[in-house]
Length: 195
Image (cartoon, rainbow, N blue to C red; front, side, top):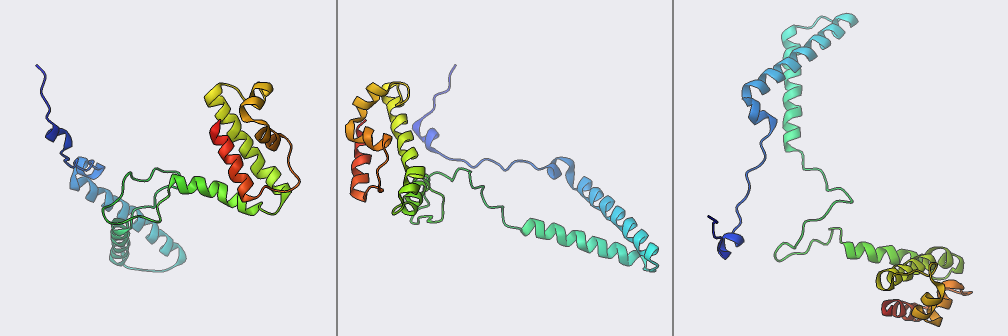
């Protein structure tokens, strides 16, 4: 027998319980014993180093100092902010109501910057334009040809030339003496979009 699910059941949201940590499985007793064992080991090492140097310090002072350092370490670890997300990680989907996270990494902004910086950098330099931008435009043209028509400029040059059109074919295969103006570049992009 199948259970029927209503629309309200699909649209309700219940928070999942947080994952259990190792301390909850083993209990508090195990965590305390582990902390005491670590404190004892550190105390023995500190006392051995102090005695090797020739200092006489009460064992209780060393134990108190080690326990204090471990307690401070535990508190600071619990109060530390979460690590920042990785650069290549996915940002959470959606927006928070009423605000926009301007600092979030946006795929569109990344793509725009991937073109904006090299275009700006090579705006007055033909050599930079030929080395950096022209190959990218050629890759875009080849990718569009591959996706839409199953060919590239290299695999079927004659058909690619007719699909691209003479102005775009000439632009991609024979670099000009100067970088194109923004208007010319817009026309080239428009031709690429028509493929």
